[in-house]
Image (cartoon, rainbow, N blue to C red; front, side):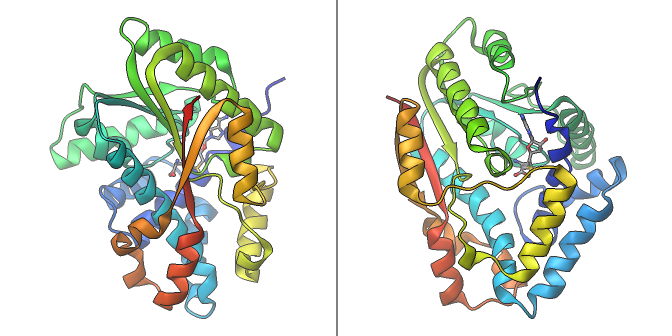
Length: 296
Ligand SMILES: C[S@@+](CC[C@H](N)C(=O)[O-])C[C@H]1O[C@@H](n2cnc3c(N)ncnc32)[C@H](O)[C@@H]1O
């Protein structure tokens, strides 16, 4: 039987709250205001304030806030650098603003997530667009997808790419650390099969395969992480080294390379709201990696 992944969904609220409070990323404040009107943000919203409050005294703890902005900007940078006429399929898009930001600049932008999360996203997007006087963009679609179920990938492929093959970029951020190694294998194999079946050229971009060692964990982060693990019913799982990530991708039939988030360091807007030593945080940011993998 398929596990219940819905318990992971509220973590999207935490990420949306952090983006709205600490970053200048586009649409984030409008999105979070609409989220608060749409769902109970409860303790996930409150965790955001705790991170900020403790972060004043325990600087390293706020590196997770930097990580959240860095991963968003890094995916954007890799997408931009690749260039060309791509359709983007964002997996587990949660309350991310990327669909709104990118749909005008790509051939097609399909946001996917579990059905309940996607219903919240639809309401939130409708509100944000109504308030900004914007209008739904024909290139911007929402589609329910459990990324662990290939039948659903196949459904998505037939609906949007059944007629004409396009270049397809699959992206996700903030999903894989909630998956065990065997679930990560399923995710990889589903993406590979999907790209081979439906894309003329395919790529998979994700910042999710970061290595997260003991040294990066402060006691504040440990408390926050263990609360999230209890709420989601999931144990965080990370690769131990970049070589392991490379082997995992290669075993799944991908050619892969990775990019350090140092490339977007100058764009990080959260740094002006956090109490951080710039040199130290640059070193930490340089260890965050975004992977770009193409079917071999
Ligand atoms: C930490 S949130 C990240 C959301 C978004 N990518 C962001 O950065 O704001 C994790 C997301 O993974 C989604 N998710 C969890 N399991 C999933 C699955 N099996 N298939 C698709 N999405 C899933 C949740 O619904 C949630 O939106």
